[in-house]
Each structure stands twice: as structure tokens, then as C-alpha cells.
Length: 299
Image: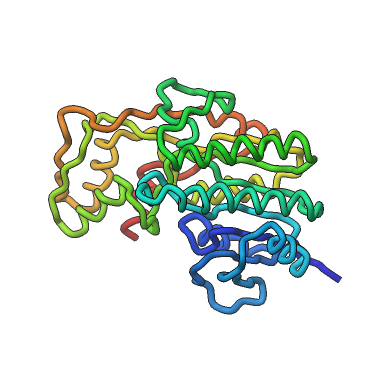
């Protein structure tokens, strides 16, 4: 007799997926990880899949074989800085992958909950302050368009096919394991190696960040939420730091760190959206300030 929920985590070896799996393995669930890379040792609570044909029928076969109860979709191309010279790779990994997965969920008809990791990039240049989840999508790059496309399509699956789907729209996620471009990571690495760094913005430029551990905790809150979801939720950190603040926090550990800031901003400011909806409906609040977040790089 089955006693544990079986949760499929796509991107299980990725920046979000890996710490998420580690956290879930401490609870009474069974994890089915899907990722080209395998990071976890053999575990009675974990099975890894790395080389499966990601078609709808194959997903259904996997659901049936492992009696999957929930799906957490963290996989795909993970930022606008990747594969801009290979647009079809972005479309294939982010859109086609997601469509096959969600259609398999619909046909299988036994999935309790689907959690989709969407992005602030779906909104595009977020120039208005404190916007809610009804703010119109206007992506400025293909990555953002891929997230917006999937987000909109999944919303129709949510409305029309009785699937409990949650789209978590994350602000920029940072943390020590991030492998793709990130100004916080670049600044910390420059401080560690005692190298100069020149940044393409003023020190008073603010940016909406969330630490990866807060991102993971929001996913778990969504998974454990017993009420019917209202589909979309903005997710961000507890503060809205300027890069000057980031630099000052780094200086508390590396006294010689002295970054050079530009006299003008060569990237557009992105405002902080509202996270009141998830606070109210799931009682989730972010806990890792930029001060605590920088500390995770150095301990």
C-alpha cells in the first residue's frame, strides 16, 4: 500500500531544484528527479531520471510507473542570458517541454497539484511600483516570452481542465550555487579573489532579488497549501536592496572590496512587485534579507 506522496521535480539538479529536493527529502515524500545531471547519491526516497524522451506519452508512462501525485516544474533554460544565439533551444526546453508535461498531467488525471516556476521576466520592464499579479505581461526577451507563454497557457489549463496549478513568478534569484550571470555573484567573487570590478549601473540602483532558500520555501508553502489556489503568485525577497547596499554587506567580510560603479545606469531599473497575495493566502513571508543572503556566500 502506498504511504508516501510521489513528487516529480523537473530540473532536480538545478539551482532551485537541488536545494528543493534536499529539503523535501527530510519529509515524508518520495522524490522522482528529472534532470540531465545526477547529483544525488542512492537514496531510498529518491529516484533519478536523466535520459527520457520528454514526450507527452513518456510523461504519462512515468506518472503511471511511479504513481506520481504532484509535479514541481523548476526545469528549463534558466535566464535571459542563456542561448540567445539558439532561440529554438529556449523554445524547446521551456515551452514544448512544459506543454508535454501539462498535457500529460491532464490526460493522466491523477495529479493533485502542479507548481510552475515562472519569472518576473514575463512582465518585462517592470516600471510601475507594487504591481499585483494582474499586471500585463510584456516580455523584452525570448526567455521572458517563453515564461509568459507557458504562464498564460497553464492559466487556461487551470481554468478549463480542473487542474490545481500554481504559477510562482520569482524575482531575480541569487545564492551561492548560481552558475549563470548574476551581479551579486560577480561582486562576491571579485571580493573573494581581491579583483577589481566595474559595474554598469549607479550604486543607488535597486533590484528585486530573492535568495534561493526563500524561493524554495515558497514552493514548499505552495505544495503544502490545502486550499484551492488562485493560480498566480508573485514571489520576492523581504527587502529591495540597492547595489550600494550589496557592496557594503560584502565589505563587512572583505574590507578591501571597492567596486567601481557607473555614473549612469546602463540597465533599466526594475521595480519591486507586490507579494501580498501569497502572504495572505498561504501565510508565506520571505525571511532572508540581503544582509543574511550575502552571509550565505562566505560561511
